[in-house]
Length: 134
Image (tube, rainbow, N blue to C red; front, side, top):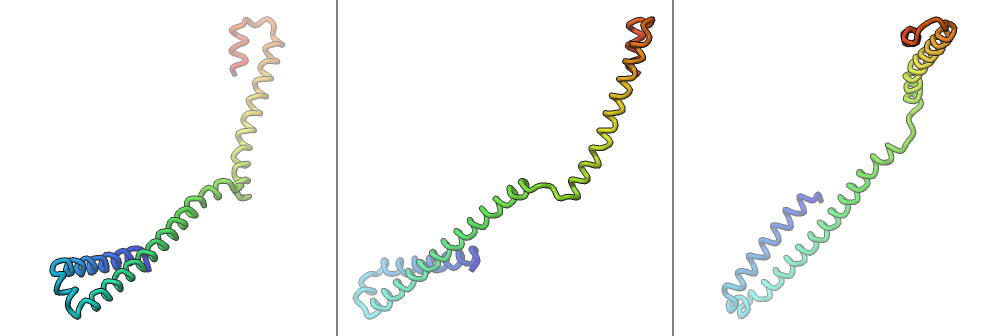
């Protein structure tokens, strides 16, 4: 049974039990002195047994739902720990290559600019700065 169905059934049985107890309290002499006494006690015990059984089922369903929730909450953590699939690794490597090439080109140009500035000792400091910036 699903939780909502159990809760509805439990609610109905508790209401029936409450009505029976209320009837017994209203006129206790009629119920306890008449032949209905045994029948009412039997009904009362049956209702109590149903309520107890439904409560136990509800408890088991709630426990199972909690376990399922814990499992679902733990699963995303497992996915984050796993390494990237091969296709994603290749994609990252492909994205990093142009960046590495750009850095190498910048280093090459910077190095050659420094060499040309050093090779021209007649240039002023501001002219050397312009040369290295290009």
